[in-house]
Length: 48
Image (cartoon, rainbow, N blue to C red):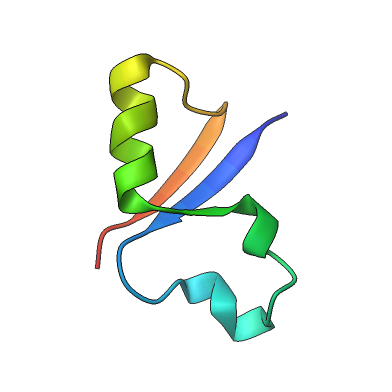
């Protein structure tokens, strides 16, 4: 299953160091992938 955590400022996942950096992406990436229809099966969006 594919997944991705999108953020706009400081990622919440940074609290665990770089462990989850590979599954994180900027909010702009979310918007691009949403427009293209290529979002992962599970997407978490943290807009703040």
